[in-house]
Length: 306
Image (cartoon, rainbow, N blue to C red; front, side):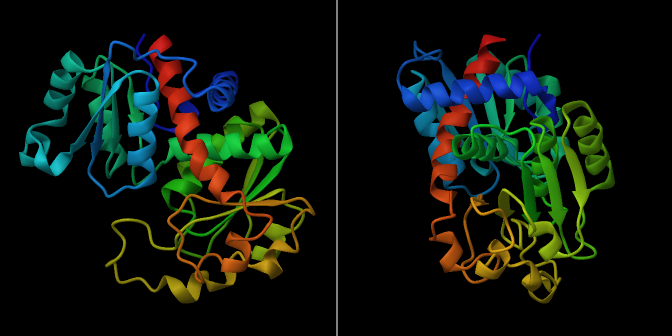
């Protein structure tokens, strides 16, 4: 059966752990496994701008022995009105996997429905599972485990990072807290899915109204830009609402003594996070960015082996 990764809870706890173990092995030996030798090709489609996703997939596919086909969707027939289903059927005849960074989740679901090769969500408006795999790899590197740790997210609870941290964190047995202003809370269905998964893994998923309470004793503090791609001109004033959620030295001081800080980048310094924290000793952001490469290589390898 063809497996896809469209959202974080497409993986069971055991499957998530297997991918993270493989990511650690690939980080230790970057060229030790070459499932794409041939070279076999992977199509990597972009509807949105990217730095880390594009570079990490392109480099990772090459390290796996494959040929990365980077396709700007606007310059393809997909951008000129060819249906997503037809595109999926055609690409499946050429490549061994398809990676897509797009808008609404329904688009990548439609692609997967028409594809006969694995499809990977490289970011949609609702989920960002590749980033959260890298986040979880980073947390394991620092703490040696996932289960039982507390991860607190500060920012837009309705965005893709909050949703994926809820689902991916709950799958890993983490206690996930989401702190967001009124009007920016997670999708209720996603939150309930995270709670259901947490009930099986011993983790938890909850909304916490006050940033101080969300930070208290947390092992991991996570933030993200206050304005996601595509929201730049929606007319909403996020600065006033989100300013109390800034990850700064005062908030970090309430966390556990050995707490780490994550940010998926790009960072708007002085807004959601201060220079003092982003560049400080608690920051694991640069390891997190590197781990996109290793986690995505492991994910592709795992999917291809299914």
